[in-house]
Image 1: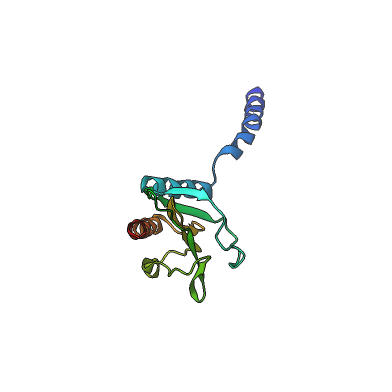
Image 2: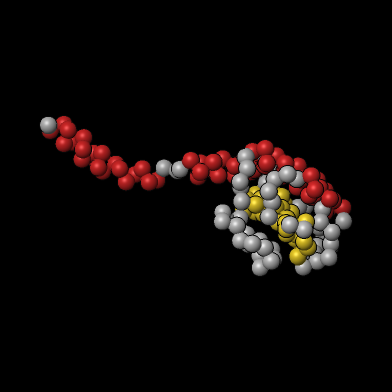
Length: 148
């Protein structure tokens, strides 16, 4: 009986520690972000450009970006496009959306580029295959941005 009481007290003391263990969805998200980092991307919480024009998704929106080489003496304009039922809508500039967006099958809310990075805004709703597509798209797009 004494051992049972000791076991109960120890279990009662350790029970709150179970809240510090990550859930399945938290482990999945961490695995996706680590895979993206190993693929050369960085992950940030950013506001979606032109958020007033787009419906607000239920899941948090995350920016997966690729850093660009600094353009010496040549300032770059920030540009962004929102995904809509009519296609890609430009936010703030009149530039055409990147052609490679048509081949991207990942559900992307927006894409954007500034002088430091180019990237996509999404809800991390797919797996590592989606990150491979995102990496390929950002690699291709970053080359065209540097050439402009």
